[in-house]
Image (tube, rainbow, N blue to C red):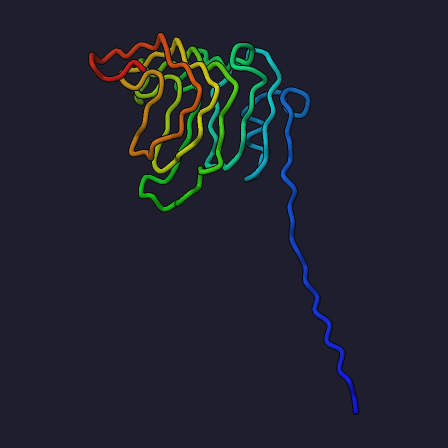
Length: 175
């Protein structure tokens, strides 16, 4: 009588999340976001970063050291932070684990360009990020000066301060 030995080979593909440090690994927050993959964390040390960032439909964490000491300054060049989803809702749950935390978002300006919406943070389509421990202040736009939602699911906003933002279109949302 022969006995058969059956061997099963199981291969697990595990990819560890990466922590990308700004400014030691990348000099800007945007370059770190560009290098990140879904599941990664971009960790930003205290300081002022003059840039405008776009999450580029990535499911990542971008974490500042502290909302009082880690500042993203949009330098009056459009929305400081942009989250773009799918306007038709085809990216179900894409941003369920996307987090922006520990920053002051300031000096965004969408008054003088063709977009005109969302000075501080713009959230488009089905993007649904978590905005945590933020100060969103001193941003300008025609409407949605602090946070602008465009055909968007509601973001999760936790422990954040939205103040002193200016809408240039009367009644259209300074905050």
